[in-house]
Length: 166
Image (cartoon, rainbow, N blue to C red; front, side, top):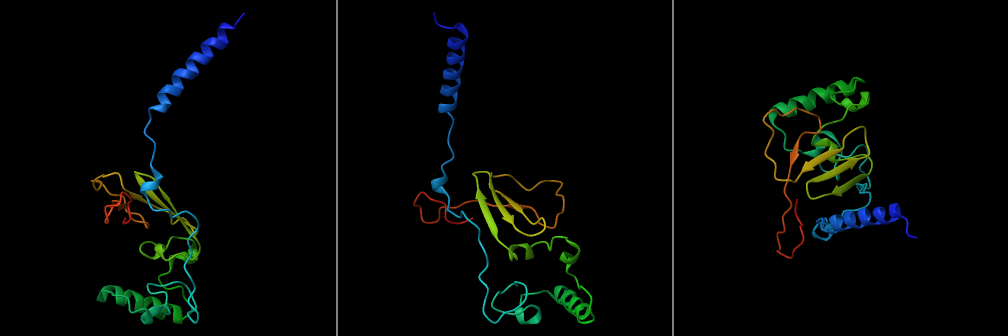
């Protein structure tokens, strides 16, 4: 004689499977495959931490496009470092260096792409970022963070059905 509980459980499970079967799946093939750990390639002869231009040493040799105010901050920082101080490097007390510097990481970066958010996990302090790609507007009351707040959009620039530009 069949067990009524087993029949009821089977009926419920079958109904749930029908519901799940109608769910829209995330089509990963439309997005670039950025899986794995990404690292900067060290440049022979360039010592020190990664910079704006990784082929040049830190400081003025970078020739970064700085405003006069930013150039003054860099000069003051370098003078403090020349005297043995830390300059304006918050990382020495385990704070994030902030944007855009977190995007020139010391260790590996990993990208996790979903339709609504692209996550950038960075192997340093707490520098991970979220780039919202769900079509949202800028928040009215934006909370300032060292990592910033990022809104992006995936584009299929060559019309081949795959996103190729963030």
